[in-house]
Image (cartoon, rainbow, N blue to C red; front, side, top):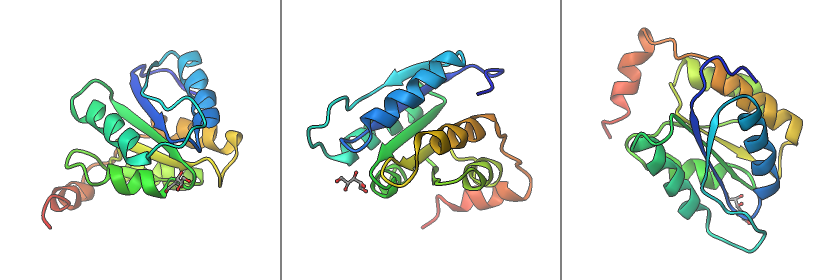
Length: 149
Ligand code: RB5
């Protein structure tokens, strides 16, 4: 994982994702990032929106540059995250979505499914997400329109 732009990453999961969260957090720290781990850490059942909202608030309030969310599929986390006005959450199960989510959508939160991808794929997705820049240009107007419903 490229640590050229070391930053703070907020990370959270529900009970489907603590093991993957630990793997990703370790990789982030090894790359020089600061990790704001907002739980959950056990396998007892919790509700994914609670963790999605905590991570998204950290990003919206500037405590973290990016957020990473893990649940069974990533779907619930991404739905919850995208209810935040300041969040653009990309659900990714492969690196192309992670790359284009940054290049075209300026995604600031990444959601992944611990029950649908393995650790190695998740690590590649995260590294791609963090090292890919937003392209701007023709995408700026589209992002501006996201606020209009
Ligand atoms: C929890 O069983 C599961 O529903 C959750 O992790 C997630 O996949 C929801 O989208």
